[in-house]
Length: 110
Length: 112
Image 1: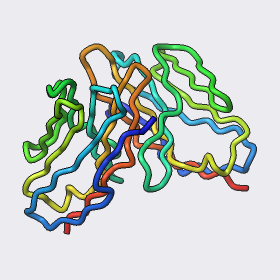
Image 2: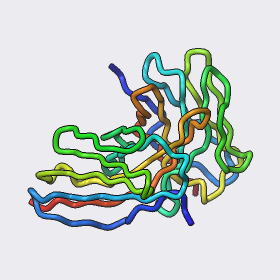
Image 3: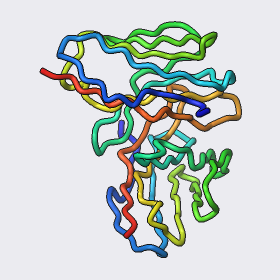
């Protein structure tokens, strides 16, 4: 079966712009989580959605937001981009068997 | 003190060696423990998923959890060059907590 699909794979944005990343979970999975991965901080939890409701939020500023649609697909948005937002953004879909990650979107802010 | 500590390595071993990777944690509420493998420019791939204390084996991989010591391990037997990757431990408390807390990862190189 298809895995977790994230688009786009790579993005280059300018400081101050906003960006939207997309994630399609494994078919049948209703929980979607987002993580930021940087060399300095490792993987850090952003937020988690289930059936269009945010159930958990990590310790990130309000510039980071997300949503989930009725088909379980999820988007995350970062507004007013800063250089420090450059990272690999990973989406995971969850079932009783654990969390499966996508390949991520590598965002570079210049 | 970080919630999850993991030696970043790097760790370099010859092909065929037994590899031991470890994490310690401070949150006694953690009940679910995972090991992920991440190749360069890829997302993490789930290797092992265990609940509470004990051992779990899957092929060349064995995961051990000692909740009394707040210590988890991943053993790789007969290591192969294809095992060269970053290994990440992750854990959560379950229930209404849907957040995974990760170690920083250990970079492993298996030399032919």
